[in-house]
Length: 153
Image (cartoon, rainbow, N blue to C red):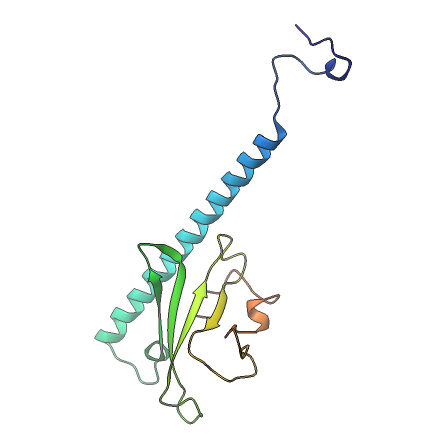
């Protein structure tokens, strides 16, 4: 049987639509799948970092960049989307001898969107916002590529 209301004549009575619920359900599903995609990618990056750390302890190399960067999830049990990096200041620069902490936040759309990176340690540099510590680089904005990993950023 069809509804006889003038606005519903073309719609069969056995079909009910709730656009708000449908849209919300689709958005929730997309967010969950994005979050799962981001988490999967970040877990793979963590495995690669741990594998690289093991290989450098068994076969140390000269001038190894991995020894100057420590990158791990802040609390893997809480969220794989938040990471901490420790950078050793490069030799021959004013930063030599320093260790600098960064906070890295990945959105649920990572790696399609870049992470946000900010220095926790106060740093005075043209690419670092003097109050917030936010790193201001093209590769963390419009030049980001999903092929890059956190370590490259």
